[in-house]
Image (tube, rainbow, N blue to C red; front, side):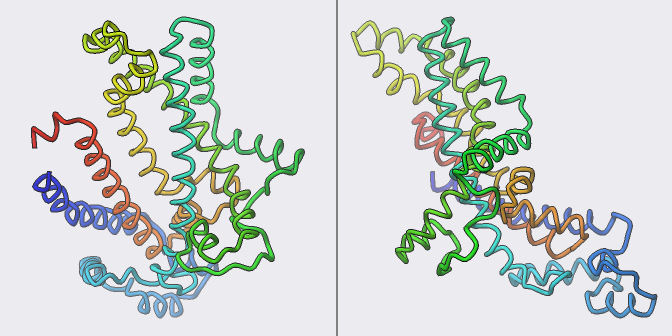
Length: 335
């Protein structure tokens, strides 16, 4: 197990180098001048040359690449071209909201998806099974932006239960320690801010969770049906075990592997920013930040954001592999 982890960790810097290099080259292949885009104004040639010199864009691309990689090795991701704010500070501000959103959405999709999938297997080919399968397909088919807008109309505009946008209410005082608001508000005992934060988080997390639950429900149903017809399940039933014990203790554990894979990949994708959901709810996460950086051709924002997301994605996949070994003893013996 330890040897396997060491092998995976050796590949980590190689993957980050590849992602960093491809991002660097892709940004510079695209035609257009990022300075004019970021500054949002037309500059004469002399002004443009001075600004390009400040950012090192007047140097050969090979020299730019060497400078970029040397700064990256030192942990320097640079400054945003639009405002001059350090990229590390922007990541500190933007990544925690996205992690919180992704975690809550993952819990929602797992609870609803796995529960619906198991129920569908228990009552296979009955009315409830057909209903679960229909709702799963419906969840896969509905555009996420439409679901978000409908939730805003129903719960925010009509019922006035939740805010329409943002991360916390305007005018609420709170102290930032880790920028994970759930942790910060509990540590400081700021229950008013905690309540406002949870109300703002609810709709975007449920929107992502419900639309993802369809995938989870269908995969859970398929995996459970494959496992539940196995010989050891028939043996467990022949021994007189309760149906609940057979389903959850025997069948579910072996059906968990593909579900863990799916949820791990979904969580990794959400760390890149649920762009559409964050746009609909004006949620200040990585998705909106990266999208704005791409539209503005802000090299520093795009490079820093993608590198950090790639790191989170690789670590998430490593965690999934570790969970595989924890759940399946056959893999522990193989390694």
